[in-house]
Image: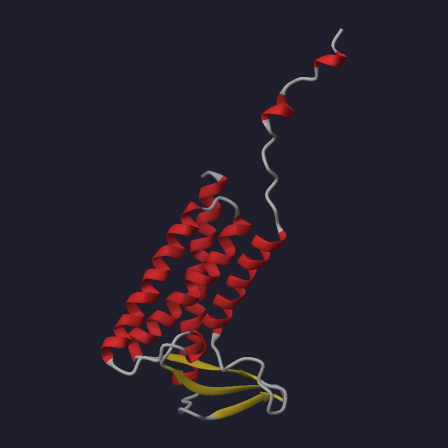
Length: 177
């Protein structure tokens, strides 16, 4: 197995593991804990499980108010997942593949929710008193956000070394004897 193939398989395995973990965590909240919409369970002074349904996409934008919009969001996010998969399969370095795997696994988890329920199950509630720096989210949302932040950071902070220019590869003849 080539290193590139190994990296891509690691990325796909990470996406699958994240998808499974996201769905298992949501199953725990919905079935094992039997939480109801709006119910909150305090875990720490700054962290609760609070069950909400997100009918939109990020930050509740593009709320699906009909079945047509619901399936449109499923199709749109499915298309994004396909694009991310193709992008992941074109990358060679693990550092470029991992953030794409996070995005892919998270997207698949939220797509499955929207397909099964018509909304995304959100329940992770980080707060400081009444201040909430984030909306209530889930594991998939966190993975997508982290993946996007890694891609942005890498694109802004890491510069690929440009190949040597042809002038740099010509031997300097002044020192030849």
